[in-house]
Image 1 (tube, rainbow, N blue to C red):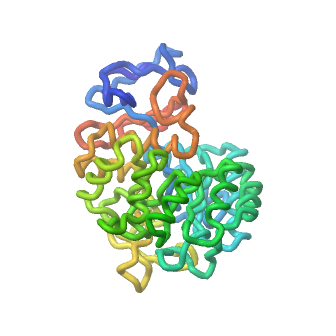
Image 2 (image 1 turned 135 degrees about the horizontal axis):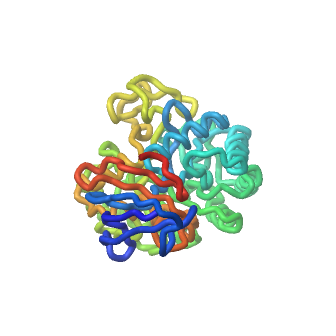
Length: 377
């Protein structure tokens, strides 16, 4: 396939007017067949990569059902999100084990939809004071042997785990996670600057939904945010749904951390793609009104988003983030944060041919190509 006439995303140059060719499932220098896809007026971007979301279309990753995970994967692909690393909640170990086993089985079966590239364990190694929508009854101190059991159940596909570094045994846990090939993200925490800095220097390389569920950045108490900024290997997530973070703070944070270190996430819930109403989430109930989801009876407590990652990309651009920087934060950066950037996240020759064409006027999806095959026309 030859995609012609579009503005093609380039990691270094932004957008470049050139053709993009695919040969089978890969990006190539020449088209593998005679198919031509005209893309005038389009951004040609890599398929998006979401490393932090919980569900969509009435299904939740934490339910650990094969049918539910398949519905989520199908929906995400329809939104141009081609690679997903869904997040589990704070739950008992037996349910977390079921989540991991379901993920491993789905990957073996390769049943279609967006590729499930791994799992993100957002709980249970968090702190009570900043648990947010997580269920405090199931919080657990950092536990390396437990993570090892979960990684074995997942057949090695746990990619990311969120940790409150002030909890007992956190530094040892970070070291154990690295040995298991799991990236550690600091979040749902009351850690001060010194504690967070120690965690990042021990190998944690990710910050879970920056600003949310952590102390604010203050001029005499920089906290997790200040510590994350000072360690260049740390990448920072932002929920760009227009609810969790003020647009000015989104712009400020891109300026502070730079386009190379920002990851846009959706943190989307099962209510994404569904009507307003009440939905279960992590053993609790949430209520959704428009694009705002809160814990039932606690309207001040946000419970994740109901916006897909593609919707968050559009929001970030509407906030004034340059389109190329926002695309990078939804593609290459999240891929790099979990170690899959060698095959996805850019449109370089040899990468997987997962491509989305967006109308430059309104960022609506024109076409989706997944591993060389057309998903929409």
